[in-house]
Length: 284
Image (tube, rainbow, N blue to C red; front, side):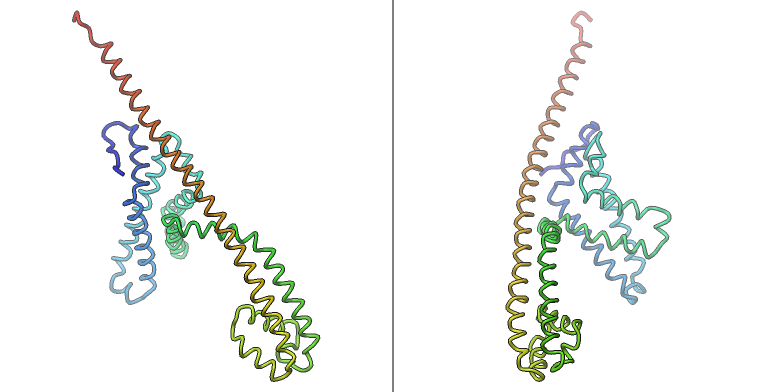
């Protein structure tokens, strides 16, 4: 994609900004700056690096801030006479808030808040990489749907912990002395955390804990976990469909804006030709 030159026509500025922001090379540069900014923030946590190259690291961080600022300005200019449309996108609002907050006098002198703002810039990598953005959208859609699975898991664990306490609180008080201890054992089994030692320790006190654990593992650790995975996969598929639809809409919008831009150029040219025609007189 070729970025159009601005020339002296101010009407070309929005088109040039849109072409610049959509250009593949610019997107690569933007992502590289985000990664560089994250690396600089990480280097600032090492005291030897700060002593040796502290001024250089702060200078690089300032250059990254300048780049992000110019990117926000280009985004605002890309909408021409309707800059408020820039804020319809949540990511644009995020970029604008982070950049503006970095220049505010009250926040600029606060080292802790300024570091948090710098750290928040790394989140912008989700915008530069569609695959990460897709995962983020899928996670947001999976959380409400997984509430039912989480509630079912908690209910099953509580009931099974009560059964374990009733059956084994006398023979194995170390693991089933209370409902809390029983829940801790079951949580370890669901997370597959040291599962073999948990089962062997309980079997040393009571052999009947083996079928108790096996039934819970088959239901809790496999069926419920697979239900959660199914919810996540369904959310991923839904997010993929939404992303595909947004891509088609964005492509249609870009085509429409390009046609409107060409039509505006043609109208301006016709108006200029008419103006020259009025000024011309063959009897002069």
